[in-house]
Length: 393
Ligand code: PMP
Image 1 (cartoon, rainbow, N blue to C red):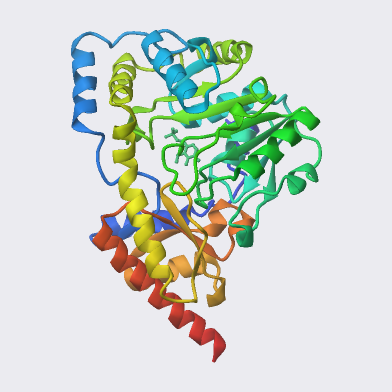
Image 2: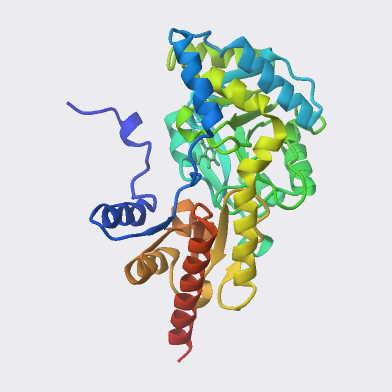
């Protein structure tokens, strides 16, 4: 029996750059120590107090079905947090709890696009974006941002991309570390309003901002009725495995998305939602504590990069990554990444796995301890210098 093309077409063919990642995992499994700077997962477990809250909630009996849109306690906290951070009046009716930001992205796509509608997104992009758009029956169309511009999108380029039902953006950005400027976001808001487009704003890294402040475009004039914000506990509270995410948007859209979840996920486990409530009650200081290692490591890496002139860092303004421009080596990100894995047992993600705009770049996840990261970056820079010299002789 054949599986539907709706499913087989989701990935769009190609490995999506996961070959290198898989090879690194295989090397590790066969006993070779590998420094993995690949996926965006903290090098610490979920905090013991949160795990304890989860345990207690399970013992207290939060193991049955839960309210479809999320437990009232959690919706209330997310609404308050969003209002506190943005100033936009937000009630629990504007919030829907979903099993992770990824589920939120899919729900947002389903909510904004008819089958066959175009959804625009910015290249370089988080690797699941095109597949998520296709899974929702829409047509993904990337709009390139430029390395030289620090991968800030240009609204004129988005405008030139033609008709679309939705625009998906992500700031702080994975993979580039860019934080969209107020001007970029104002231009995007103007464009969405003029073109009558939905804006889907993926803000899962909103607690990891190193320069400037996080601005949610939902707070911009005229945007509250056309913006769906996707958020998550994964990055902000080191709760990747708990699968707690949300969509924030206009009440009517949230009610319709709740209808989608009735027919797909049917809610999120109660003990993880209770643990999320506990985590949120620990407040901003706790979020800052979770973010701190990435800020520190970002500073370390940028200081190392500043010592040489072969590799250029994209100004890493936020998120847990630094994107490196290796084009001076003449190698693709994939070729360089493979060489780095073979020669030094260091795994990074090739820029090409995040779209064409990041060709000749690699993304470094800041997810190992400082000392190990410094050694890995030093080795990466040495290798880049050797390759660049080969090119010039
Ligand atoms: N958006 C971006 C940009 C991400 O990097 C991720 C996870 N790496 C997600 C969404 C989804 O995160 P989760 O499903 O764990 O909330």
